[in-house]
Amino acid sequence: MISCKQVATALASAKLDVAGPRRRLAVWFHLMICRYCRAYARQMRALGDAARRLLGRTVTDPEALRELEERLVERCRRRDDPTSG
Amino acid sequence: MAREDSQLVAGIRAGDPAALESVVRDYLQQIVRAGRGAGLSAQQAEEVAQATFVTFIETAHRFEGRSKVRTWLFGIFFRKLQEARRGFARDRKMDDIDEVFEGRFDEAGHWSTPPVAPDAALDGEEILGQIHDCLQETPERQRMAFVFREVEELSTEEICNILDITSTNLGVMLFRARNRLRECLESKGIRR
Image 1 (tube, rainbow over the protein chains, first blue to last red):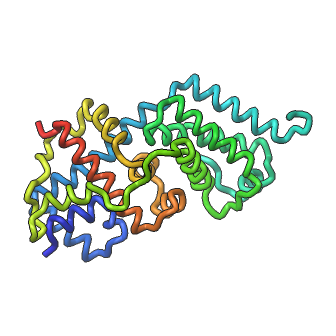
Image 2 (image 1 turned 135 degrees about the vertical axis):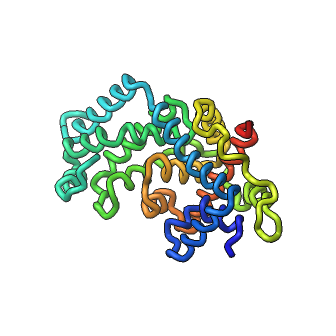
Image 3 (image 1 turned 45 degrees about the vertical axis):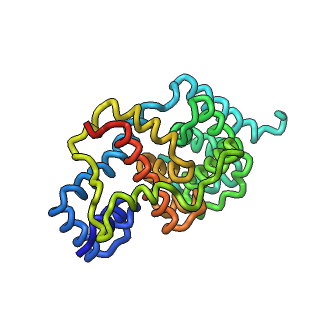
């Protein structure tokens, strides 16, 4: 029987991405019967959701981003122009 | 998303302004966001993004197209980020979060201090400020492994290339980042 600690470790380290079907089934079955590990699994998912929401909305001011983009694009073009420094 | 076709790769290698420009337009926002994810201020994130693209433009002829443009760019970004922070303490090999995690289980591997109830407000608004603070307290590599995986949704292979670590190492980084964030949020009182 797989332990809570093993389940939590697998969930946090993304080991399930590469785990075989037997291991996945064992974790799935464990989650069915263990509410603590279910809570932990839910929190792991929620961390990712919260980070996506946070960073999705903290993107730089669009005006500043556009200015930076223009500066860089200018640089791409200058690279091709032997008359510029 | 950029076209990853051979024409684009050839254009980048040749220093074709249109190809370079398309890379800037496609990825600038993502790179700035990654800088914000690294805990930089908006201005610092723009500076690191600028340094990233300047290096990209200057070294474009060395791009062989073996990795994706995105991987190549994020690799430059990560080096620029580290340069920008030179002098910061390096990640410790043993990490106190490992002990915190161990301490939550008994000898049989059962929870001795279980996580708080799943109904705690992890989807609410107040969580965003807290996760921002908790991300700040997470060591660089762990934080970037987490951000690259969860926010940028890069593959294991890409993240390992960018951070120059093995996939086993990446598992350890993610494990530590997620447990550190979880513990941090719990200590900030999501238990209510």
